[in-house]
Amino acid sequence: MLIQEQIEHLRKADPVLSSVIDSMEVPAYRNTHDVFEDLASCILDMRIHYVPTNAAFRYPRLKKLLNGAPINPDTFLNPELEVLGHLKLSHQKDKSLKLWAARWVENKYHKIDWANLTDGEVFALLDGIKGVGEWTVLMILLFTLERPNIFPSSDYQLKKAMCEAYNLIEDKELEGKLSQIANHLHPYKSLATRYLWQWRRNV
Image 1: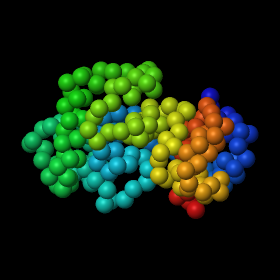
Image 2 (image 1 turned 135 degrees about the horizontal axis):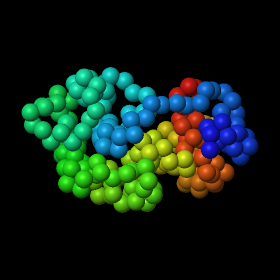
Image 3 (image 1 turned 60 degrees about the horizontal axis):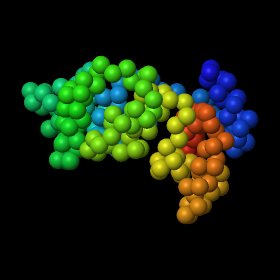
C-alpha cells in the first residue's frame, strides 16, 4: 500500500495519532537494507543508527574511521584494520561484535534473502546472539527490512511518546493500554511508531 494510503488508514483508526500526523512531515530515513551493519549499530550504541544521534556515539565514529564504507564482518574479524581499538569498546561489546561477525560468516547469512523471510524466521536466525535481544530484532524488522506492522512496546522512547500523546500514566496497567492502542493501528504499526518517535523528538 502507498504511504499516503497508510497515513489515511492511521488517521481514521486513531484520533490522537491523527493529530500527531497532522502536526509534522512523514518521518523519513535512508535505509541501508543491510542486516549486518544495522544490527552491529545496535550492539555498538544500544540503538539503531536510523534514530538521530551525535558524533559521540560509536556507530558514526566507526563510519568515519572507515571513510563511510559499509560495515562488514571483516570490520570486526580482520586484525589488520585495527578500528575497534579506536572506539574504546568494553570487552563485552567487542566480544558481541566479533561473535556476530563470526556467526554471519559461518552460517553464510550473506546468501539469505532476508526480505522474503517471515518475522518468525528472522527472530530464529538472530536468536542467541550475545548482546542481541527482542528489541534489537524488532529494530531490524521495523527499519532494515521495513516490515509494516512492528510495534516495539518495550522501547523506552515509544513508551514516553505514547504516555505524552495519550495522557497515560506509567503504572502496572500501561503495557495493557499500549497493546490496546496498538491493536487500532494494525496493520501499519511501524509507520505509527515512527510518527510517535519523531513527534516526541519534535516536542
